[in-house]
Image 1 (cartoon, rainbow, N blue to C red):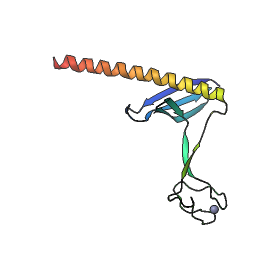
Image 2 (cartoon, protein in one colour):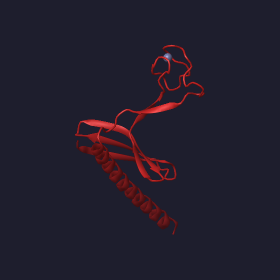
Image 3 (tube, rainbow, N blue to C red):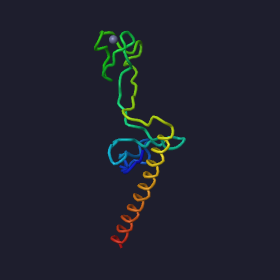
Image 4 (cartoon, helix red, strand yellow):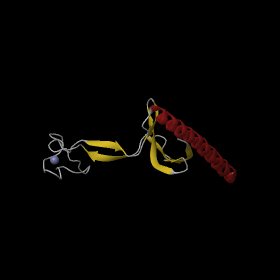
Length: 135
Ligand SMILES: [Zn+2]
């Protein structure tokens, strides 16, 4: 696997957990959009794109829309005593080996650091212009 392009979209909210979105191209052939870079206490987490889903129905195992309160297959209430039922997140795409995950994380986080530096440089340049304009 060769990651042939990486784009970083900073959220601009450096105090929030979600710091950036990342789009990558694999082997000049496949694009993966909306990988998220999250700042956690222990460091950055590269979160793969996922979607919300309700837990499978306890009675018939049917999968239901994430907002569903009742099973569309058998009509049973979803989530047992929990109201609303617990949501689960399923990755839409993800690396299937530890090696591929490390490779992807390294490329994504390096691009993120680079974009942060570029952003700081742009901000410093903009501040410099403002200072000169007020003199
Ligand atoms: Zn059901």
